[in-house]
Image (cartoon, rainbow, N blue to C red; front, side, top):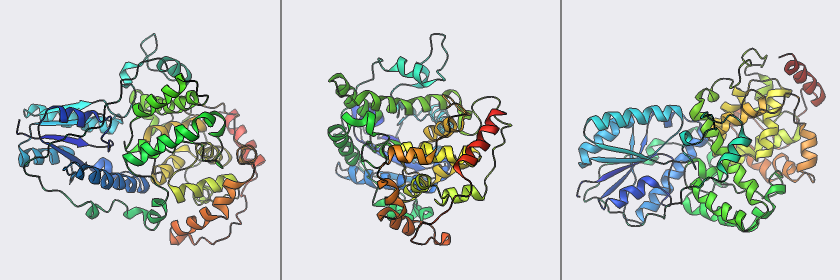
Length: 460
């Protein structure tokens, strides 16, 4: 009973509904929470890496209120865990499951090696509502279309959320820890980190407050208002979900209760949560979705590789107001409204005929709510090469979308000439030499871009 339990944290920086922490607490033994910055974490983009650092710092403060620390180590996960076992005498390690193929491969290697060495290594349910291998069609196959997937899971029982862990026993002696500041996780963000930090809402308490606010003020109108970037009508929880500061089960329980009480927007919100779930199930069953065209027959499509038009798109200089506002919101806040994400993705892949992976990589570098499964599926959905793909002739017209969903121009004004525009100039690399005025002109008309895309898609 004196041997400590190591809890290997990855994307689960919360006390509530944390299966690994709960299991460790139930042993009655000392608990040592650990985060390991391994090569998979080193490889993520600038904004998600900065946001990861913010989550680590916040959770360390949370643990300190319970007389605990978050031990930080850098290097191979297996090597670091072996070192900690040797330093602490721990014989048990718990963690919550990951579902990305690279993370799964790492975890399998760690589990097999430690088990062979006599260490109890247990994984627990992670950041999904349902384990991917438990949801299938009547034929036993994984779902590849969203609507049947939703119909399957909407009535399934979701395991109740676990209560917040309060009683954790610290060890008699703590092992050494790296300094988070020495890791410099925000270095690649440069001066943009200071700007984005004013928009981020970090930590479990912030996530729960966000959920409460959304449930009280925006859920009932969510079905209609969720497409309006000029309104504060969404939950904003994607940022917190991405690093596990709130669990999907906690969100599901609150929204399902509201749905059962007749809240008119709850079902639409639940569908959005399940859309994220669907992306991860696809990643589990068809991992090539992240790097290759998901549908057969798309490898010969004449998308362009990275190009000057794509660079203007990245910098918010396409001359198309809604597209440029969205790309600037991304640099200022680290997030982008979902309706606008679809518009900017359509513009890049269709009007500019640029490979979806160019956009996917940019989002992976600049989103603080970066989610590899949702990012990959979203880009392929818009491009037409993925599951549930939009018909090839569905090409978002940014001007029409702006008139419909930003009718008074508030969103565009904010990021093209208002406070958001000022923050954009502060955040971008100095080498971009951005001025304070917005006067970009389109390189190609919307009609010409649409016609070119339709011709290419029709000839596929």
